[in-house]
Amino acid sequence: NWSERYAVRRLPFARLGERDVAFFERLLPGRALTAQEEVKPFNVDWLKSVRGCSQLVLKPQTTAEVSQVLRYCYEKNLAVNPQGGNTGLVGGSVPVFDEIILSTALMNQVISFDKVSGILVCQAGCVLERLNEYVEEQGFIMPLDLGAKGSCHIGGNVATNAGGLRLLRYGSLRGTVLGLEVVLADGSVLDCLTSLRKDNTGYDLKQLFIGSEGTLGVITAVSILCPQKPKAVNVAFLGCQSFAKVLETFTTCRAMLGEILSAYEFMDEKCMELVERHLKLSSPVADSPFYVLIETSGSNSSHDEEKLNNFLEQAMASGLVTDGTVATDDKKIKRLWSLRERITEALTHEGYVYKYDISLPVGKLYDLVDDMRARLGQSAKNVVGYGHLGDGNLHLNITAESYSHSLLDAIEPFVYEWTARCSGSISAEHGLGFKKKQFIQYSKPRGAVVLMQQFKAMLDPKGILNPYKTLPSAPEWGLC
Ligand code: FAD
Ligand code: MLT
Ligand code: ZN
Figure 1: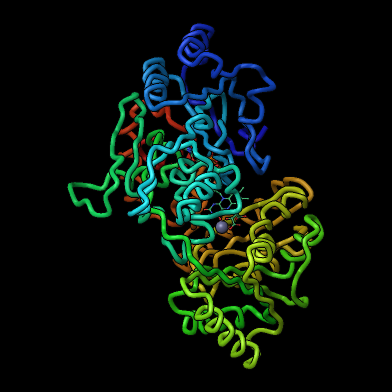
Figure 2: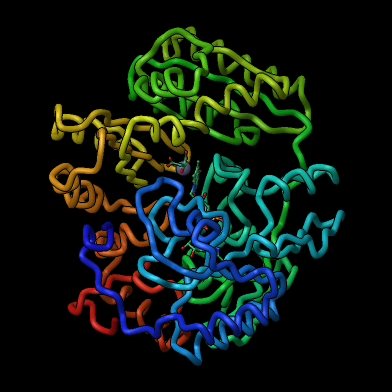
């Protein structure tokens, strides 16, 4: 039982009764799931590492329905777990106990798209990949992209403030999200769904909900700024002999590619071995200790190719890079990207995955992997590093045949102490969810955590929204 593993106790919320189920069945006919087989997949996270025991999944289609659901739950003191595509990696998307699951799966309508400004307004349950296809038809792209695009919902992306593969170029959702509609814990609707680039009228309330992981309100609609679809995209996949060379290649490519650089990702040789073995992908370059994926996006293909070729010539001539390949056509571009994007999936074939998502000064990014490897020795099956190097974001992943408490004790709090010593962040982009909430103090001062708890108490006084997530629960942290 994983709630025992994490030593958490059920809070005194009401238990779901027959009358409650009857109410929801009347409100959402055919969309209140209670059959065990139907409810089961909503109780387990993507990593299959945490599991709840909810007996009810609700699938509203409109904001008014979400509002009625929450008003009822608030009155009856029933806890609620908002859920999008259930691809979250920190145990935030599934219940801990019997919380009602409020799924946005049927809130999947585009509300409007302005072809002049590129502003998209849609319901929170739209799948990211579908949205990207929709705006691509009109000459735009979504400002974010991630390996989970085929399942994750835009509302879930906003709720986790997902970073992903395009952040280097288009920035975080804190800049591209222009407005939100949110249903608060008591069922009231907060309409901040504006589509303005500039709006300095009072506090920017939407920011509070971006990255709040379902603890402050249910996001029901999103207004987001989409960039123009670039006319020319190139991808280079390169091999480097050391991490120092990965860093120097980054500095060189930033200087030589300038405004057309749109991604700089890295992975180590172990990651390559795993995607080859488990996903049958093949490496396009000679075996190397490190690999780098560089993407350029611009408006003039010959100009961009010339720049990229000049950079590659220099990188090869100076020995920064020992082998490489370039793709300009869509098919090969996708093939190269999948080597990097599908590491997460390949790792799950190795058994239990301990995932760490760390922001660090870029020069120190791989030191943590080396130190962890030395510390764990044979007790871990794999210790791998990959991530969004251009954003200073390391994904440190450790695998073992199965979950082991002693291995966890060897990893934590060592990994958090190491990160705090470098003034890094213990969650760069995945959030805190259930698994990391007790470690928030490694990245935030006490005063900041107390203020967060005050916001939570103000917006959700009964604490019904995604309890046991994001904020620490120990009594020494005050309000909770
Ligand atoms: P869920 O997993 O369903 O939920 C995540 C959290 O948001 C939960 O706390 C939930 O309660 C809350 N939530 C969901 N919807 C709402 C809503 N409408 N209102 C309020 N709260 C809500 N993340 C990155 O940042 N960068 C990556 O590159 C990246 N790559 C990934 C690749 C893979 C293969 C996988 C499996 C995950 C990846 N992730 C990445 C993790 C990332 O957090 C999610 O993929 C995504 O942002 C979550 O969206 P979702 O709809 O699946 O949300
Ligand atoms: C990624 O960058 O691949 C994602 O954040 C998922 C992961 O960390 O495995
Ligand atoms: Zn990532």
